[in-house]
Length: 174
Image (cartoon, rainbow, N blue to C red):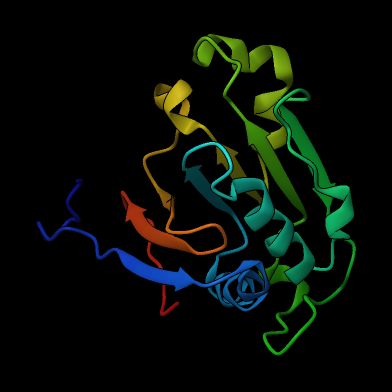
């Protein structure tokens, strides 16, 4: 695990959710603390809920979650954030919000070289939140400063989320 500038290991925050309904409050808490530009990786087995969590994050920033589908075949989906304020109790001024949510799935890639073909550079620049499923397929393309989320399947409906800041990424109380 990487160390911070002071040599300490970044803290991992663990959150257990009993069912899908518990994802909405967790997503709202994450939305409240993410900076306007953030890179987030999502790791977990097939069916762990990576796309389902991105849907919850999208809903928390005013994107219709029905528009968020697995990017396994499209590889990358871009969703514009159109509202002036994020909805909910954590309203933030527009300058502190992303302009778009980028949702990518690298599962079918052979490596980072394939990213240019899917429009990666254009999609991920600027004020956006980038959520990447299967980041281990192109680790050399990942920024050092990011939030790594690991989702573990505990039961048919229960999941454990581990949030680990990497590099200089900091995560306020979640």
